[in-house]
Image 1 (spheres, rainbow, N blue to C red):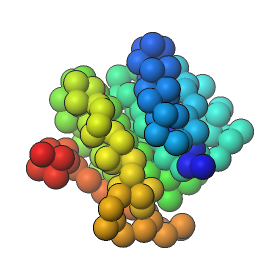
Image 2: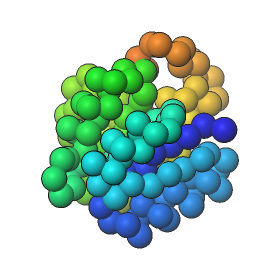
Image 3: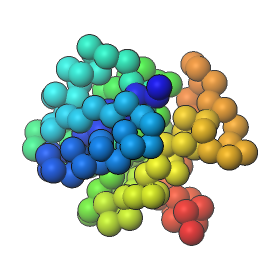
Image 4: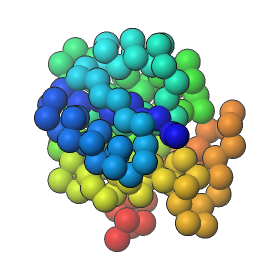
Length: 140
């Protein structure tokens, strides 16, 4: 079972998102800030990171950079309510919170090689980066 770490300082959104992901057959773990997420990433293996952009303390982009420095093969999806975020090489996708589901499920399946006709992500390779414009055109 693929494991997802979902990070958001809005606890209700994090818990509900994890419930939805679990209903889709994933093991979903929530963290409510970047420091907690880093601690959980040290203790457990996750196949993908989904993180809010704006959080108290460390933001989602800095969290993505720290995770990718340790595990460059882990895809990172940033979710935000504040417009597109350019995460450079450390972020695979950026999604708007207003359009989180089912777009998030589609991107998770894509980056974990579960999408129909999607190329499988090979361990040790970095999945293709998706910028916000590509996501908008591909998700419609």
